[in-house]
Image 1 (cartoon, rainbow, N blue to C red):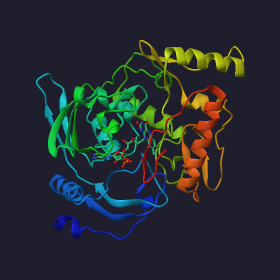
Image 2 (image 1 turned 180 degrees about the horizontal axis):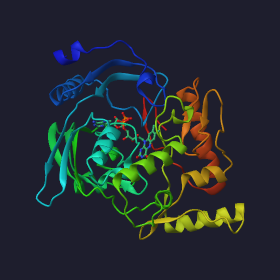
Image 3 (image 1 turned 120 degrees about the vertical axis):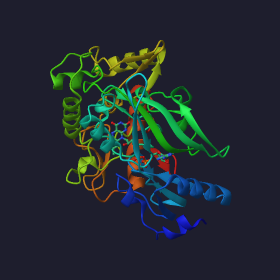
Image 4 (image 1 turned 90 degrees about the horizontal axis):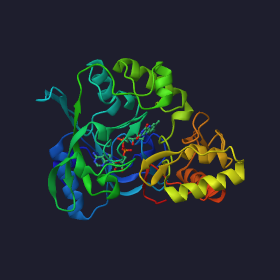
Amino acid sequence: MPPALASSRMSATPLSELTTLRLGGPAVLLVSIDSDDALLDAVRAADGDGEPLLLLAGGSNVVVADAGFSGTVVRVATRGVEGVRMADGRIRLDVAAGEDWDALVAACVADGLAGVEALSGIPGSVGATPIQNVGAYGQEVADVLIAVRALDRVRGELHDLETEECLFDYRSSVFKRDPGRWVVLGASFALEPTGISEPIRYAELAARLGVEVGERAPVGEVRDAVLALRRGKGMVLDPADPDTVSAGSFFTNPVLRARDFDAFAQRAAQRLGADARPPAWPVEPRAVKTSAAWLIERAGFHRGYGNPSGIAISTKHTLALTNRGAGTTTELVALAREIAAGVHEAFGVQLVPEPVFVGHSW
Ligand SMILES: Cc1cc2nc3c(=O)[nH]c(=O)nc-3n(C[C@H](O)[C@H](O)[C@H](O)COP(=O)(O)OP(=O)(O)OC[C@H]3O[C@@H](n4cnc5c(N)ncnc54)[C@H](O)[C@@H]3O)c2cc1C
């Protein structure tokens, strides 16, 4: 084991202390690493020994088993932000994986850099943002990401992946499709130094700002509006708010082939009446995205549903499953399966969890 690891060896801390759901048993070994070289050494050492490895940063998108993780957990704690003006006038930021995402967004907004303002209030690290192409309120990191520096654990090589190579999609990327293969060391973003936001694409945000969809607003106002909307839904971490003890949205919005969407819409009309039109956002010529929250509510699962001292749906947001204090991962997965089965029975649509399962599977 490299000295950098040996010196930071920790006892069997439950991973619940490192996850926003406050769930998860211990790992065999837990190390925190603050330099790229030590991170690469740690990963290569674990791979060389055939030791299972989990990279963990903010712990805001993981569901860790009650039994924990039977391997090494490496906490990514690298730091560093460097900015340079590009030939086209945009500002390029090269950011270490372990930097806090929302702190970066706050600093960008304070400096009048546009492109990430609608992504305010999302917990976790910069290095995790490309994994599921983090998005909210009409923006996603793929819009501004220009490169990801990563280790390919299969080939043992370092790569600078350009945006096209990241194969970004809705809550997905090359990194999410091939779990564990890539270690993200840093990400580079290109931002406009205009102080004015990208066109607002999300109706709820536009209404809050008092502008039309497609109009722009000062980035500081957009950040404030997004934070206010998110707080109202329990989507900004707050130790005083039990509705924020979650992994964010537990299910992704289903993307259906057009003919499957039509069958689902017919079924919804039969069940709920002809006026019950499911939300529909065309995403490709023959695919439609619909709302997981709509499905869950119409299948009969209301906010607060569940165990008021254990695992329950957030009282503010149908898509978030929360740990009200005495919950377990087993209970969380049981509730998630009950919801998914209820939605499938009612509408024939399969819900897919958004967070990454660790030490167990969906
Ligand atoms: C209250 C709340 C609100 C949220 N809102 C949103 C939202 O609006 N939009 C959205 O998209 N997400 C949202 N999320 C989910 C989550 O915040 C994001 O997915 C975030 O990017 C996860 O970052 P993290 O550092 O916590 O990742 P972790 O939970 O630590 O890890 C998540 C996954 O990424 C992997 N990973 C982490 N770091 C690296 C690395 N350096 N290299 C390779 N793999 C790595 C891990 O192994 C794991 O598989 C929300 C979560 C919460 C709790």
